[in-house]
Image 1 (cartoon, rainbow, N blue to C red):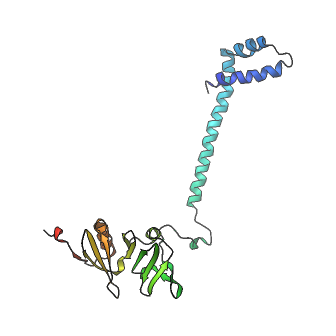
Image 2 (image 1 turned 90 degrees about the vertical axis):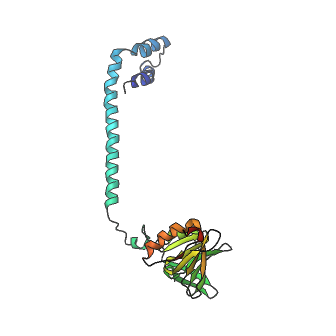
Image 3 (image 1 turned 120 degrees about the vertical axis):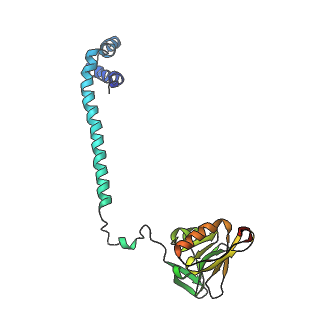
Length: 221
C-alpha cells in the first residue's frame, strides 16, 4: 500500500490531464504539472490516506468472506443427511456382498461369503461357488478393493480366496506354499512365499483356531 502511489499516480494523473485540459493539450504542461509536479510529499500523503482505507477494508472484507465460507462448510458437514434415498447409496466402509454370476444355465445372484475363491483364467474372471463356477464381470483389482479384507485375501495376482474355507497351508516347492480349501474336492491353490506373513496375519485375525502349518526344511532348526 505504501508503494501504490508510485505505481498508480502516473495512470491517475494522465486520466486527470486528459479530462481537465481537454482539448488544449500541452506536453510540457503534462510533464511538469501532472507527472513530475505530483511526485512530492503533499500528493503522496494526500493519496496515501484513501489507499490505506481501501486496502485495509479490502483485506478485512476478504478475511470476513473466508470466515463465513468456512462456517458454512462446517455447518453443512455437521448436518445429518436428509436424502430419503441415502440408504441406497454405498457408505464408506461398506463391502461387496453379492455378485451377478453367469454359467451355462443362465445368470444368477450369488453371495460373496459363500464363494470359495475368485480366479482369473484366459482374461476371464470367475467365482468358485458351492453351486458351481460362475463367470463374473469384476476384475481381481476391483474385487480386492470392494471385498471385506478381513474375510478375503489375494494370494496371488489371479486369485482371491475366502478365509472362511481355508483348511490348512504348507510349504510346497520353489518358495511357494500350498493352501488347501474346505471344498468337496479338497481343492488346493498356491501362494508365493512373499505373501506368507500377510496371509498368516490375516488368518490369525480372522479366526483363533490353530492353523495346520508344515514348515519347509529350511525353517526347521
